[in-house]
Length: 320
Image (cartoon, rainbow, N blue to C red; front, side, top):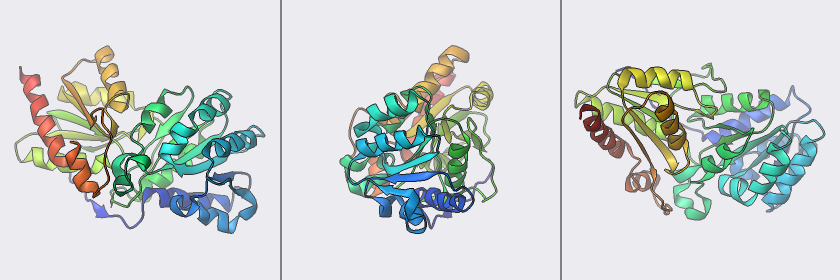
């Protein structure tokens, strides 16, 4: 199995995304940033402190913030909206749907606190349905980076892509795996470990748990192919198909509700193109709870230990 080195991260993806935003601002004088009074949490304040004339704090009013951003984007600008995923994807979803996606405006969403990465902040701040909402909207692209390098690349991809782009980011720093010059593209993925027995597809923080699960499986003689599906919509059909044709089994792991997440999209894709034994892990029709991140993900069955166990069970179906 290819060895991937996990380096302890010193910066959360939400900060890395905003740092790239600040770097871009020096040469791109046109884009603006909208915020709903949590700029010190999303780190968009870094941009606001240097470019106050291009930074709009609309107060705790995500619906109005998103609507104002749509109005600015209708004038032809790239507009970035920063905030917590729960509020941007549910409180403001009608505005995103009807006034951003429908006219295909260039609004790029910095969505922090994705899934149970906001563990200590509790259910109200854990965006565990955001992928379902955003990936369902026509013309919305969805990106989920896992570390510093991929978060900065996600900003570049979002700004280059025409129309709306949603980027899901994490609350706390976890690990870094990619070098600073790693290339990422819209609709791409990364095969992090090569294997012949089962494909494990994940994104965001679950990439690290999948990699650890692959190590546990290797001790049992099981070779898992781990994919970082950082581009959730569109996803990398070609690489996924090549992988499952080789391994003959697919396990999807996401820090999200099991229903209507990436697992549903990949499961449907497999049924239509190459049926294989399949399972998906995530929150099983339940809310999370407040607590230590690692204990919380273990409780809800998306830790490395749980992933390895589910993979071993799935392989029994493959042999049946």
